[in-house]
Length: 299
Image (cartoon, rainbow, N blue to C red; front, side):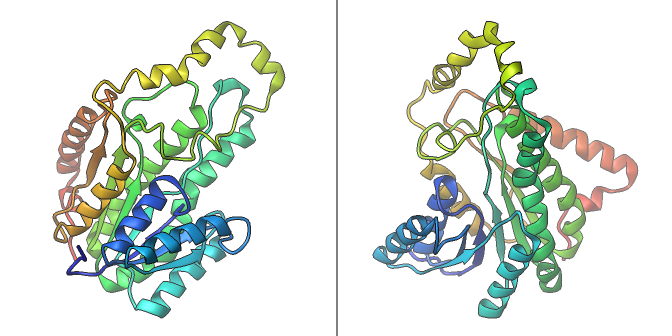
């Protein structure tokens, strides 16, 4: 069913996984979707082609942007193209991410920096390109696809956890400021998803070989990582489409009423209770400081 209200939406990392499913879902629902994919006419032409064919086959339309969140110029061009074509930017969905798996000490500092660059700074670059337009509009939604690991962390993923924690911090801190320009923020925190995403296929591993050899005593634990994660699924499969469906639902919620934090979790990870504690403590501290108004969107 087509949406009665079309929203202009930009999605990063739209070539695979959650981003692909979200782009497909929103475009078929009738939203004006701009799908950000790096080099969509070159090395990722198969991804852009598959996305366009799926959407058009199901009666929708999609605009594919050559978007590299590592480059400020690329982010700015994407924002400018959306404004040139549609005149507004209603929703920005930060989905692009990169997974790292291995022993923390064996990752080089450069690898940690790489994770922060992709998982945090990329979102900040794009925010800086998009927010001037949203502030002028006095409305908009920034939706971050974060992770439940920012509440309950996991071993053997230090660069990724650092990146997602940094993204969460960026999202929350930015939210308190842009709220006074009528701009909403939603931090969506998916639980454990092992299938339907290219995260594990494209994961990066530690580069410091000498340090890796020093961690042989943990090899059994490391080898059990995959099976251990699957033990969390006691209630059936975790369809990645569920993330896209929840994002679509959030977009139907009236402006000013969308959740600040939300989760999509089919596993026993159960990071949600941490959100309630965090919200309660934030409200208390902000009230004491005289900042309660920053917790509400004010256009």
